[in-house]
Length: 216
Image (cartoon, rainbow, N blue to C red; front, side, top):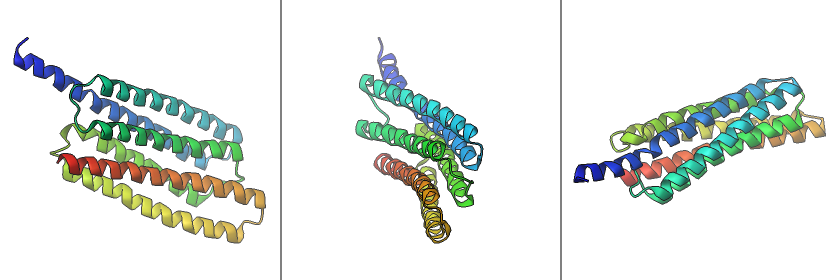
């Protein structure tokens, strides 16, 4: 085997990570879009059906994360630090888990009516997921795209601040105007799950930003 062929083995192994991260992000986006649909839904059976579909994406996300770990174990060369790859894969999986948790709460609690502010938070979660797809598609040119990646991460950070404001406003109004104690607890828990999802998206973007700084 000549030196070029030998080096090509490492290049192929390195590039195996990129499509897996893209697949993970695209799977998250599909789940986030279903969550948005669920927050708008009023029919209990349709809410449960959407929760089941999101669970299927959660299972697929676990499969992709396991594949990333398998490739990581086998790889001689990695595109960036091994610990960073593993942590980023886990954090993206956690983002999907929080989407699933929000969905599960909606399906279990069955709030009486959709809330405009909670729908708005779900819309921002979809935007987070879209930005993650853009981010992962730039991983194979990370050094060249460092500035663009940083800007995408900053957009997720801005979204998180916006969601915090919406959440605080929603909770304030909820405790002031919701007189049904059971309904109040339901909506409070759903709102908290959605806000937590936005927080995890920001954590993913912070991790990406750290990787960019290390490797640019």
